[in-house]
Amino acid sequence: MRFSIPFLAGLVSLATAAPAQSLDFSSYALTPRADPSLTGYLGVFFLGDTPSIYFYLSNGNNAISLKALNKGQPVINPTKGTQGVRDPAIIAGGGTEAGKKWYIIGTDLNIAKTSWDASQRTGSRGIFVWESTDLINWTGERLVVVEDATAGMVWAPAAIWDDSKGQYLVHWASKFYTASDSGHTGSPSATRIRYAYTKDFKTFTAPADYINKSPTNVIDLDILSLGSNAYARFLKDETAKTVFTEVSTGGLFGTWTRPAGATATIASGVEGPAVYWDNEVSGKAHLLLDFYGSDGYRPYESTDVKGGKWSASSTAAWPKNLRHGSVLPVTGAQSSAVAAKWPA
Image 1 (cartoon, rainbow, N blue to C red):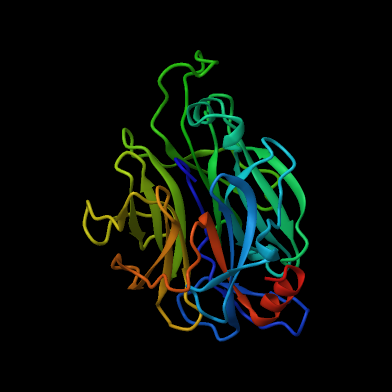
Image 2 (tube, rainbow, N blue to C red; image 1 turned 60 degrees about the horizontal axis):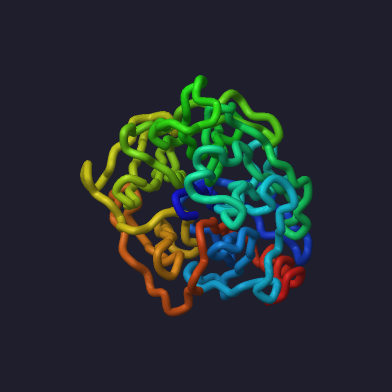
């Protein structure tokens, strides 16, 4: 979203393929290895200023070729809050949730009903949540408030399963005003990435700072597991309007450094990074960057994520005007079931 933050939670492999129409997803593994049980990709996005959730499915197992489902109409229309959702992130179950749930979370923001200034001063402090056991029926719509009244907004929530905690680490971007400035009319803090833990996307721990680079504003975080307690994360420098990557070999709270250099960036004039592993080529990853002033998402690729080396992919089969969202690798049975429910 314009001036927002994202997520795809580094989700990589489903362990076993399910029989036809039986959506078995009994084990998820966060690993860069290719997985023959995964034969497609499901993407969730919003389109421009249309604040609903649209589903896209890959053409076969091509990670950078997508087609619109549901005849190009939204699959989820929010009914709570501002009745607008942006920056959807699709999250697979982990730990005790494995084999039980997928979640879609997103930003509560309908820009047609507000302004960019107002949405950052007195915007929603909640996270939209839907859940599913089959990728088809999405229920339990809720808007969970995660920040107190000093926050100006909660934007582009995303999540990753933290094995060490047995919970999801959920992150988003917020800026803050002093407690005495109840109308949020003064100067705010720099925008920073916040986090909390949850097991069910219903109750959350008290939020805290995750990435604070003040006075630089940072938004749009997405995290990819590299295995062996190593991670890559991607975020936007909102001050410079660039997306860059950092790597930690010491876990989600380890020391993060830019592998390609302290000032290295992937691209300028972009936001909403969404990263996912390739199903067929071990060690290959795909990164979507939203060219918000132009044609939306464009794909990038890397076979050296830890080294921070990324290059633009072909856009020959990539649809235009997709905005900040995420992509989930899926099995053939899951692809078939989703396509049957929402035909292209």
